[in-house]
Structure formats: C-alpha cells, structure tokens
Image (cartoon, rainbow, N blue to C red; front, top):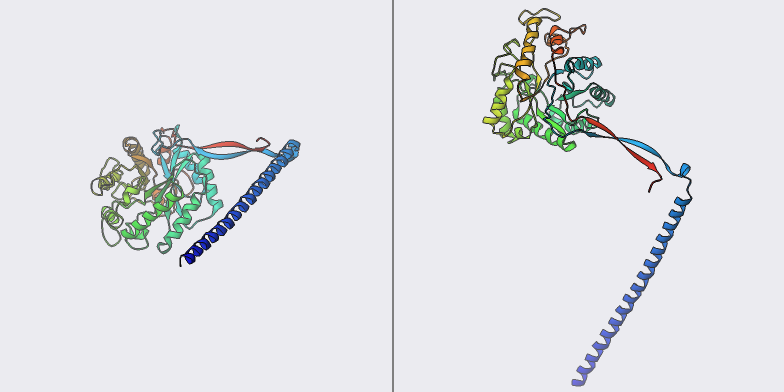
Amino acid sequence: MAIVKIRRYKFWIILLFLISSAILVIVLGFIKEYRRYLSEKMAAEAEQRRVYTDRLNNADSSTNCAEVQEVEYYTYSGDDPLWEENNKFGIYIYAEVDEFFDRAEELVNSGDGDWGYVLIPYNVKDKNFEKWNNVFKKLNEKHLIPVFQLHDVDTDDYKDQTEEAAAFLNRFVWPIRYRYISVYNEPNDRKFWYDRIDPKEYAEILDYTIDVFKEENPDFFMMNGAFNVTASSGDNHMDSLEYMRRMEVAEPGIFKRLDGWASHSYPQPNFSGDPYNEGRWSIKAYEVELSYLRKVLKIGKDLPVFITETGWAHAEGADYNSSYLPVDTISEYFEKAYEDVWLKDEKVRAVMPFTIRYDSPFDHFSWLNADDVPYKHFDVVRDMEKEEGKPPVRIVNTIKVGGCGL
C-alpha cells in the first residue's frame, strides 16, 4: 500500500514538472518574440523619422510649405453684463426694413451717444440665413445692441422649435458679448397667447427656453416676456401679478433663473398718463413688478430692467384721434421721462419705446409717419445728450497659420 502511494506521489511531481516546463518554454518564446517586435518597431520608427527629416531638409519652401495665412477669430472686450457706461436710449424696430436700422442709429446714437438699443421681434420658425445675416451686419456696423423678442412658437412643438431657434441665432456674429432674449410677449393677454391664459404652460416653456439657450451659449441673457401690467383679470386677461404667482407655483424658482426683467411700462390711462405718475399705470410700472418679485416671490436678487415697450399715443396719424395727446405734448413728456425718470434710475438698463413705424391703428405710436418723416418727439429725443456706451464689444483678432516653421 505504501509503495502505491509513493508511485502516485512521483507521478504528480513529474506531471507538475512537465507542465511548469511547458509554461516556461511558452513564456520564454513570448518574451523573445516581443523583443523582436519592439526591435523591428523601433527600427521602423527610426526609418520614418529619417525619411521625414530628409524630406524637410530637401524640401523647396516655395513649393512644399503651406502659404502663411492670417485667420480671424473673435473675442469680446469684457465680461460685465452691467457695464457702467451704458447708453439707455433705444427704439422698437423690425428686421424686414433696412431703413429702420439707419433711423434707429440716428435716434439712439446721436448727441455723442454710442451703442444704443433696438428691440427686434424674432419668429422662432424663421431660418432665413441671408435675411438675419444682413440684420447682424447692420447691428455691428451701426453699433446697435439688439434685444430679440421671440414670437409665434407652436406650443405643441415648442421643444424642437426652441432648440432650432437657439442654434440659429447663435450662428451669427453678435455686436456685443451678451445676447438679449425676451421670451415671447404679454402671455397674460389671451390675444398674444393662442387665445388662452395658461401661466403653467408659459412657465414650462420659459423654463425650457432658458435651459436650451444657456446650453447653446452661456452669453445668452434671458428675460421674461413682458406682461400687460395694467390689465385686470377678466375674460381676456389675467392680472400680471397673479399670473406670475401661478407661474411660480407651476415652476418653483422660475424667476430666479432670469438674467433681466422685461417690462411694458405704459403711461395710462389711454396711453396718455403724466410722466411723473407712479404705480402700475405709469412709466414706472416696473417698480411694482420688481417689488412683487422681491417681497412676495422672494427671488433674492435685483434684476436689471429692460423696458421693451413704452410710450405715449399721439393724436396724429392716418386719421386724427383726438382721444390721444397731440404730438407737441408727448414730445415734452418723452423728454421729461428720459431726463427725470429713466436716466436717473439705476435699475433701468434700456428703454425701447413702441414703435419706429407701424400701420393703423398703431400708427398713433409711430415715431415716423407713413412717408417716413419723423414726428416731433423723434427730433426731440434725437437731440438729447446721450452716453457713449462702452459695452463688452466684439474684437477681431488674427493668428498666422501655415509656413515651414516647426
């Protein structure tokens, strides 16, 4: 029995030895092959370096070196969205009429002014590159800061349309770093929101729009769609403060996400109020909105104000409307409003009255008549002294590429 055990023991020792020997042979063979592979690889790389060096040494620079070229790229002169030297003057214009850009420049950049503002409606379905490239070219040439007011979104397809609009607008060369967007118009008025009043729906769309534009470019400066702040709740409107409250319930923290506040601060009643009035029916209606944001909705920050619509209706137009003030009076009112209210209020960043020119019945708000002749208030505001705005503007840089330098 002992002899059998010894024989089994010897058998396992011999088997283990044979297996170990086989493994050792395989490992040694692998090491040998790997060393040969490394040697061949290093030799090949050395040959490639020699050939490349020979080509460089023997190359004719006039034929084989790339031509030196200067390539342009853009940066901006600063990163403060609330730069100190700011020209608050602005006007509401339209992209489709080239002359409006000339008139806007004349109005807002006169009197030693520079870099005034323009409000421009933008249809989120409009992808006409040639048209909008022309718009941005004029904005850059004429030193006009645009605020684009979105409109005409299909609420059933708002996600795709928002993404496409953000990508489209981001393609262009903007005149300053910050890209102002006001997200639609007076949604608490059913005639501007698909014949319904739906603060929950608007809050969801606003929230998504902020996300998409910020993801596309963090320099997009996002604002609410300005509300009809003077209307009371009824069949066609919802009180703007109640509308805001319901928005906050639907999307908690929605107003904290805004970069600025768009306001339609009109002088009521009948667009004929005194420029020194206060409250919701005045050119300082934005103060009521800011107070509600701060005290009731507790947003915890002060939003800069962009008045994207305001102004007095004048009696003069295609037909004389005696219910409105004469143009001589509103010219005085505009001058007082700028000098004594808007320019002195540090909360206000820009004032863009409605409108440069429009057909009846809005011709009574126009700054140009049907023949493109300025009304008196155009001349009065044009002749006012203005700030030489110094926003973070686009800077063109160049870099040289090509040549034979190593």
